[in-house]
Image (cartoon, rainbow, N blue to C red; front, side):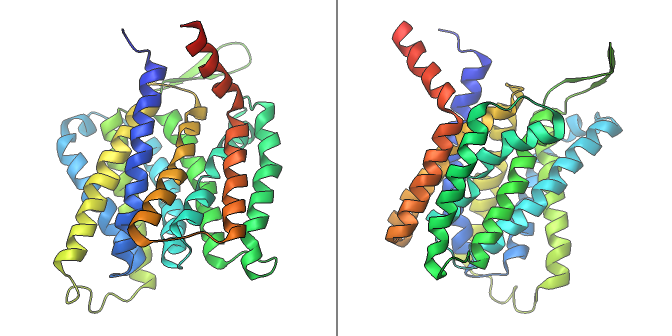
Amino acid sequence: MTLSNATKADLWLIVVTILAAISWIFSKEAVLLMPPLLFISSRFILAGIVLSIVGFRQIKLLNWHQYKQAIAVGSVFAVGMCFWIMGLYSGVSLSVGGFLTSLAVVISPALARVLFKEAAPFTTWLSMPVAAIGLGFLSLNSGIEIETGQLFFIAASFFFALFFILNTRAANHREIGGLDEVIDISEKVPTLSLTAITLLTVGVLSGCLSFAMEEWDGVVESLTVDLLAWVLASAFIGTAARFFIQTHAQSLSSSSHGVVIMVVEPIWTALLAAAWFGERLSGHELIGCSIIFVALIIIRWSMILNVFKSSKAS
């Protein structure tokens, strides 16, 4: 049986969610031992260098427009990753952080509609108030006030949503039209080149921010085998492998709604956090995360129905 590109994309994105969840563990362990922004910079520069070496010949053949697309994708992703790592560093539980970050699934179709006039189904707008109710339950921990760490994760989710949209557009050929005809064709950036440049951009920008804001004194002295292991695992497994597979999957499908597969990432993250760190959600946190997950299901309800219909038909 030959799988369609859409099916292959879905399967690859499921692998991405597992690698992403594992990466939460690697990153949490690392930021306990080194400055968070410096960690992000080290992680992404290492991963970017590895992929750049592998894809050097391909990268040399890119035109200036393709370079600009990849750098723009990396710049947006860099902002999101900086917010994300500060949320992780703040002490918010991995389970809560995972569900807050997953709001990118809800935000992505709405952003694509506003910025690029992509069609957004009715379920997108229906899921938003549900997600807001979930956020309300998460904020009950300190009155009706969202913690700073939670705000970092929410901000990260906005930039991750924009990153996913731009990454999908960069990874696919696009016709840019006038009123009656195609006036330009935006050539796609090959998967390996796009991933390598994106990761290097994140590493460089977060490194500049770390240099300006963080103290690097004592970092070398505090370097241990454990810290080196977490950084390398984050760079090669949680970053290079994960984002190469994600970009490849996105290149197989031009729809920005491919982000829906990522709905299972917070589930994997919560399970791993419970197993690795012994994290347990409080009652209102469990309700809040559950409601956010319902919002994720609502936004992709039509896809879920199609899956069941296809299975019955076969």
